[in-house]
Length: 368
Image 1 (cartoon, helix red, strand yellow):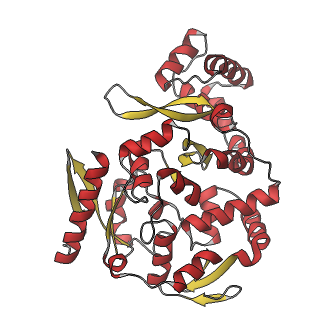
Image 2 (cartoon, rainbow, N blue to C red):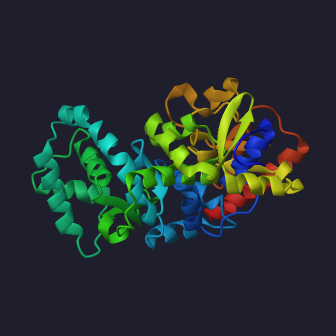
Image 3 (cartoon, rainbow, N blue to C red):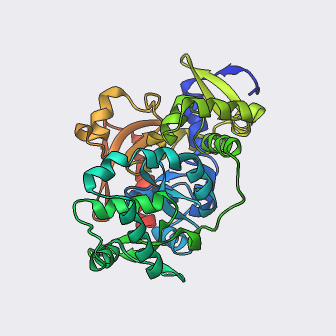
């Protein structure tokens, strides 16, 4: 594919490049930490779903492997953008915050007033948790709520959650090592960001914006500039400036009358390699909230409008796990004990049913 002018591409070509970028098809990443380094960020508000999102893009990582990466600090979870939890690499988190923090913090004023929170409350909460965690400590959410309450910092009525969010958003805390919750399910404890993500070499604003766009496209492209603005909750002006800064590092393609940006390296790799039979025939079980769907504002290339209700029942913001075949979403699935229960929109062919069964066995191996 040429770089520097728009090239027409079919929807199938577009979706193949996205699957290659996300390591859903083609070469997989060797481990979960490599996934976050390549994709920059993966949605993590649903912890269990986010762990499978990391593993499904690797060769054969299990849930235990993902949890070990979190324990070792090779992956952290926090709010780098959009007010949404994401898994990120520790070396990337701070420069991402340098781009997004001011806008996100500025948007919190009204909610802080509603909760009766002011600067002294945040300062007091920060001092308490810092004193508790300095020197490599960690603390569960419930333990932190109890600590703050015992020190006279009220946490009721969503105040506690907002305190954690603000202190993470401003670079004090992040979610780190794995702990077991009351029901035995793995979750994470809070740690000091300085101890888990030492500051990287500084980037100026233009460099950070350009890095943001390039890394998004490496791990998600092809995508529109509007997709990127939605993904980061940034500004159109900053996105256009980043595009200009990147120059020939990006290529452009046109599909169904829409212009998409793609990292030049991915465009050339997709052109140089033909889709294998296994890639063409693959059926994937992706988790809820997966980046393959939620990484873009416009989801029409992969999801028919008539099936949107099945993916987000009642429009409640809770996304279901996905069955993907030929790059398109063809159903949802759920887990019943150790068994995967597929819920296709229409009956699958015998060939796709066999491939779905293989995908279900892979998930079972992952979950142990």
